[in-house]
Each structure stands twice: as C-alpha cells, then as structure tokens.
Image 1 (cartoon, rainbow, N blue to C red):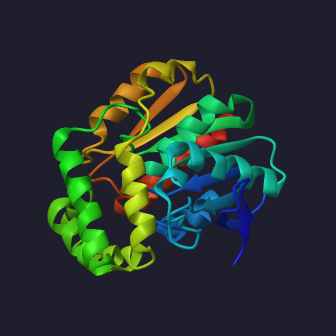
Image 2 (cartoon, helix red, strand yellow):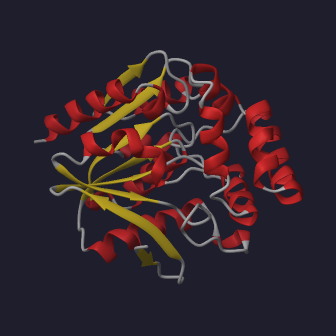
Length: 269
C-alpha cells in the first residue's frame, strides 16, 4: 500500500486514480478512502484524484499519544503528502472532518490551494460544537476504548444523527457502517474524537479564503446550518444542496454529487 511519511514519521495512506490537475480529498471522522467509491470514476475522468486518510484513520498510522493527533497535525499530513507527491498546488477538500482539515490547510497555505471543496462539514465552519454533540462524542471515546469498534458502530447507529440519518435513507448501509468502523483502531478513533472536541474555532477567518470554493450539503444533514454560515463568509463560494441526503451526501446522492463537483471543476478550467 502506498504511504507518505510526514515530518514526524507518521505514515499516511493514499491512493491515486486518473490523470490531470490534482484533487486531494479526505473523508469524515472514522471514514476511509473507500467511502468515495461512488465518485471515483466521475472525479478521476479528467483529474488526478488522490484519496488520503488522515492519521488515526484506517490504513494510516495512529499515534498513541493524543498530543500528536490534532488539526495542526492533520494539516501537516496534507502538506507533507503533497510534498511527497511533488504537487505544488492542488484542489483540496473533503467531507466533514476532511473538509475541516482542508479548510485549515487553505488558511495556513493559501499559495498551495487552487480551489476548495467542502462537503457536509461543521468542523470547516469553525463554530463551537453543540452540547449534545460534545456529550455524544465524549461518550463515543468511552465506548470505543472500553468496547471496541463493533460496540462503537452500534453506539453510532443509535446515538449519532449523522450515522442514523444514513441508515434512514438507505437501511442497507448498516453493513457499510460496521465495515468502516472495523477499519479503525480504538486508540486512533478515540484520539481523533479528542482532536475534534479540542478544535480551533476559525469562523472569523473564513473570509480570508480567496479561492473558488464549492459547498455541497445534504438537505437533512445536521451540518446544514454551519455550511450556510461558511457560504456567508467565503466570498467566492457556491452552494449545491442535495435532496434527500444527510451527512454522507456523496453516498446518499452520488449522481447529484458527481454532477455538482463536475460542474465546479469545469468552471475552474
């Protein structure tokens, strides 16, 4: 499996599809590159599509020390992956956590970003988490470390509206949920949740983003409010609303998602 090595010796998994201008995408917390499967053919038809997994996730390393899993370290992961691949400038983005990482990367390294794609993301808005979300995430850490990833999958289906919303729209997705949690290590997922709970609040800086930005969100996604806030704050942003779709918009409505991203990519040409 291909990996890049970061400045602090963490292995970051990536896979490549297609050729052309590079696009780097990361999925949401607990996700993996395979979650983009319905979109790979469309997005790689005219572009070099690079799907990567941040530290703490799936086939990337999971540092045991939570001090080494933060949004700052995830930004390093993307920066060092681009260096490893010899990419000076790219379209970057992701879904949920992946978009939160890419947004912070854009703020830290604007010269390396051609355009930004933000999908179904509260963390990209930089707004504080709600109390219910904080409680659910804290309990998730406890369940993960005490019961393992199958217990965490059951808890997510019962308690996480992002996950339950996916199954509401597609009951067969229950297996998918278990499969992607089983790709995680308990310490990797727990530390990623800790990083999310301690994220920096970047809302007031979003106006600094001056690259073309696509926002894609499901009409039933709990992140819809924060996504609208991002739209208000980023001058060169366009918004695509998927319906019916929840937090996994690229999987809930793959054709509409592919069309929205494809139209955006054409607009950059």
